Image 1: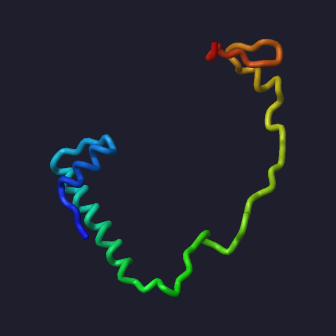
Image 2: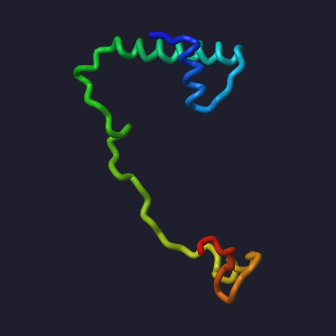
Image 3: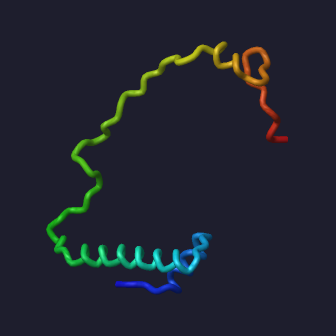
Length: 95
């Protein structure tokens, strides 16, 4: 499978990219190279291969959430440009 320069221009337009003619040619070669690799992969017999859901057998390998105070309330407010007793003061964004 291969593509042409007009396809590159259409893709560039959709992606809001601009290429000069030299870069268009490079992109065309790169895209054709990628499509050739995909064609090579299509030649493989994958009828006996189950699709992967995860890359490993591990399920939900996550750390436990542990709460910890990294800085105190006073330390957080210390560098605030504006504060009002215990709160940060920010500009009003909703009316």
